[in-house]
Amino acid sequence: MSRSLHIHLVAICGTGMGALAVMLKSLGHRVTGSDENVYPPMSTVLSEQRITVFNGYAASNLDPPPDLVVIGNAVSRGNPEAEAVLERKIRYASMPETLKTFFLWDRKPVVVAGTHGKTTTTAMLAWVFTEAGLDPSYIVGGVPIGWQTGARLGSGDLFILEGDEYDSAFFDKRAKFLHYLPDTVIINNIEFDHADIYDSLDEIELAFRRLVNIIPENGLLIGPADDARVRALASRAFCPVHTLGASPDARWSVRDVSSDPGGTSFDLYELGEHRARLMIGQLGMHNVRNALAVVAAARHYGVSWPDLTRSLKSFPGVKRRLEERGEINGIAVYDDFAHHPTAVKATLEALRRAFQDRRIWAVFEPRSATTIRRNFQEAYGAAFDNADRVLIAPVFLPGKAPDGNRFSVDELLDGLRGRGLKAVATESVEQIVEHLAEEAAPGDRIVFMSNGGFGGILDRTLNALGKKHAVEASRKQD
Image (tube, rainbow, N blue to C red; front, side):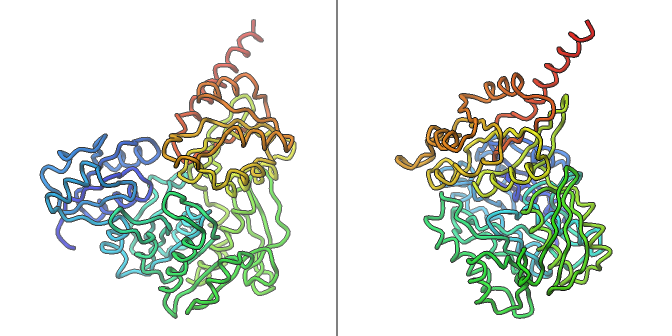
């Protein structure tokens, strides 16, 4: 589409929608949007891009009518802007459909999918390809550290996409990634999630099966050798398959993994032959696996070993993925997106491996559509084993979970204490901040885990720790 359009995005502050907004503006279109949950980092990105965002939904936001309205998958019938679009016959589309129409038909999409690790793997791949001079386009469902935005339109023919299995819109219940015309697909793992739209793991596997079925014969599927569900999908692929993992049977495998506070190092093997000793600045075996997927894709597209080694080491990470947000009086505070029990466990294992002799605080908010339900009630009991102290926030909007299927903080508390953990259920963000300010000591690592804003708890905790440290320093001087 050559002429400049006015494109309005409803629910623009979602990570994918915000990134799409930035990319549409880079094509020269006038972009506006609306949302009722406007908070950093996406609100900051949109402001820096000078994209007008209406705080709240209203039919008047569509006056005069835009050329196209992109409706996010968080929007349902009853939303005043969705209703106005339908009544006035304003042209509308889903986020993934818009992405395909404007950007993907004339490029080679590399789609990163899976229950966990999508954002970090996508960002790492975009970083590596950019550093190698391939100038890819990319859209990341988060904001990489040090980058102004998680989306960019490059001059190269590669387009790196975070491929979500969540549905596309209220009028299109297909998984988003089915719109993305994949040439290469990375599937990190497959587990149950998104209990608000999927009733079973079988339904999720069906979506991934459909994704694999549209990879062309000259494409590539990359996935873990030790994930039975991914292996089953790979057996049906019409394209070549590259496996990865700790097993020597995998095409891409690792040995001699070591961690310290500065990151993780490992020996990389291809088909049993040693290729390189690699270093990444991120912690945890889950990030080693993310890096393996990046290696497989990068080598497929001709990235040299020197470029690959250098760029993996310099990758800065992604905001809210075990991101260190500050250190006060020797107490380090981290922000993490973990909400699924597998992700919670991986995050805490990564911290424990790097900080074996430090006390680790896990502060967890049950917030996601799956977490507020009972699907993983028992699984969370074992997810916190590597923490020394656990603080559980109240369930966020518990009324959104069906009656009889609501997560129980009390049951989680009993389970954690039964495993010997010191765990406390809290009544508010204020109580958590007060508890940490009173009890945290120099050397402690505090990680906040939530898929939402968590009431601004990180900045509030850092401020409280700073005030306490200032008072104690003043007393010592007196």
